[in-house]
Length: 80
Image (cartoon, one colour):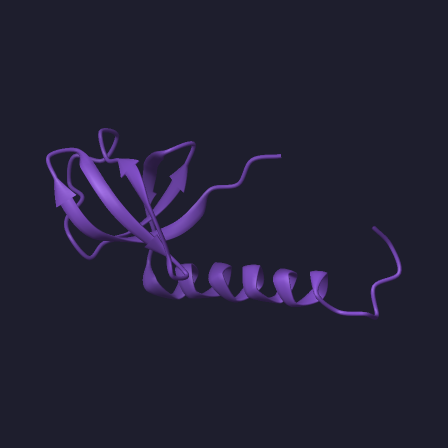
């Protein structure tokens, strides 16, 4: 399964961006989003920014990902 995750553009040169998703920085291409700018929040999938995301939606997704991580680290898990 593949996920698109929200990430903030922290560096931008042409269509090459460095993005930050919950403290994890990585490279992404912005070729698909001509209007993107430094500081924008974008959904990144397979190394490409595929759409802009509003702040509230991005925060909700980050919170959900944090909750999943917390669940993975709990001793109360029954499955997996």
